[in-house]
Length: 328
Ligand code: NDP
Image 1: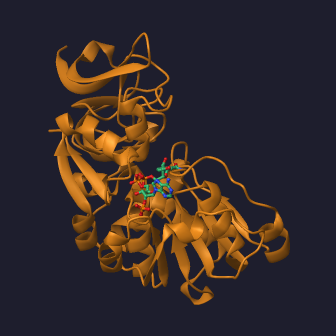
Image 2: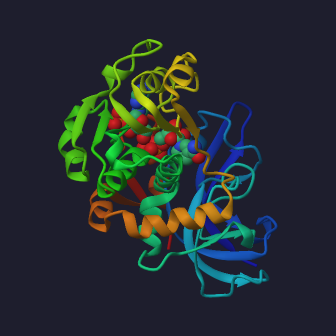
Image 3: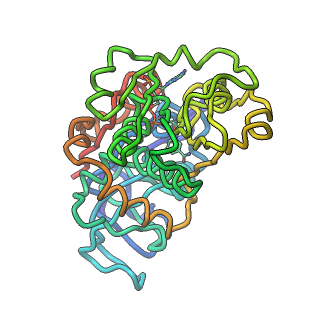
């Protein structure tokens, strides 16, 4: 057995240390499929892990990185054989299971989704957990019964990863998308993605009234806190908001008024332990409902050595769209 390159996190006396280093293959954790990782990405949670800002990592040593795309090298799982192209998101990778910023990963075959036809491994990681979460949010809104005829939809954190993909997908599906951002300088970028309106996130960040003027029929919120509370208070009768993020905080200073007086629904989105069938649906829809040209426009590429700096930038809200990490 040899070694391979990886971003390794270790526990230190105070906090954690992170470094690009060689990792011993013998230290890989149990799993029935070994994958040659070709591409990964940098999500908000990866930023928290590599900077040690939040206790994302719960096992040491850890290889950071919550998602990858690559090629199966070895498998004792009936669904997979050497040469298969696969995608893996979440399932505790980079948290409790050795993760994606590495040339090799060993995981459970039950965690893997076949790379959808029409998507390259790089495309899949340009989408990444952020984009797949955006699609889970869209699917939840559709399951709720939302259609473009019901009225506008709002997307918060719109210039971020989840927000950019949500904006692009919802506009392609025919929705009038109101994109909320703290970076009004990115208004042109958001319009290019398909936003019909761009609003300053300050409009949604103050204390929320129990009920306010109805502005949208649905929404995708990656921000949380008072922003989510405002979204709920401004949602039309029987509308729904998919809550998937906490970029501004984990709290939710809201009231029951939107729920009991307007029948508004709050839809919780979790990508990490999401059942495999829903993952397959989300990836299939991403292959058809996300404009590939737009995906290219929102993506920039780094290598493994750039991950630590990119992690700090994503936490500082300085990343526009998506980052792909070239591993091999
Ligand atoms: P990004 O950093 O790419 O995007 C977050 C965006 O939120 C920023 O670009 C910024 O958008 C906005 N933002 C940042 N800070 C604040 C603030 N203080 N107040 C208001 N808005 C703010 O991260 P991702 O898109 O990768 O992730 C977004 C969120 O979704 C994170 O909280 C992440 O943890 C969560 N997430 C959850 C998942 C799940 O399974 N539920 C899976 C993936 C992500 P702008 O500049 O446009 O204002």
